[in-house]
Image (cartoon, rainbow, N blue to C red; front, side, top):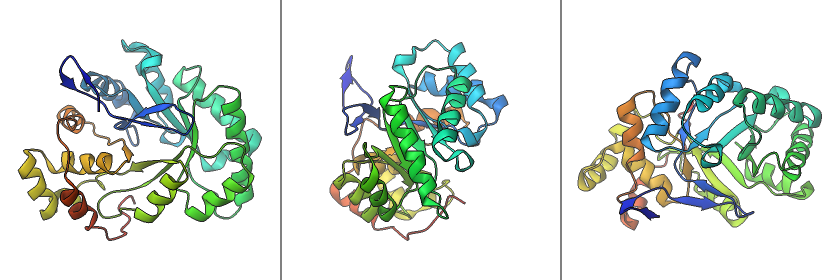
Length: 276
């Protein structure tokens, strides 16, 4: 945690190559193109500089335009995107990356991920990883990684890669803690990122254990869950179209959970998918 002008501000994780990523970002999944300008500006105003994007979200061109119209320097942003399933393979991945750069109106990305492993043809995914390495070697992306990869799939990448994945982005919330995979990632120098960090909220935010902890800290249930992610070493990027909620989600750097509180939230694990 760092401080500027007496105010507590963003925490960071470092990738294996030394590049830093803000531990709290803003998710852009399911933000309609018409809503993108207000959403991006609202997130910037709240303090976000890390934005998680993907080609399949269908809004990267609108996001790129919003950043161009915003009073923010490119070097102050951390931008992630992902190559979609239909674009896997060496040449197609390179082409998809260039399309994402064009849509976002940027010269480089901070992080590029394989969105999903190809379960039916993992050799295609390995070819995709070779393209990721090429983009990294060319300096077009500062870091490369994967999303939704299992331990076995990561081991297959390790066996052929020149550059190991620096990130594994996985579904993660108090009802799906992913402790074993998270530890495997950490042991192999991979930063964990958690998507759906509050599991769409409706179940997790009503949990009695979480609400008791929230009351103790004078915080909301969502703030406590996001703090749990960060205190357990996960990078997260909640999404909301409500300005008040966007600000609320960012206001989590003035408290920490103690070991007992972290254990109590982690004990809620049901290995339950809530993302679909």
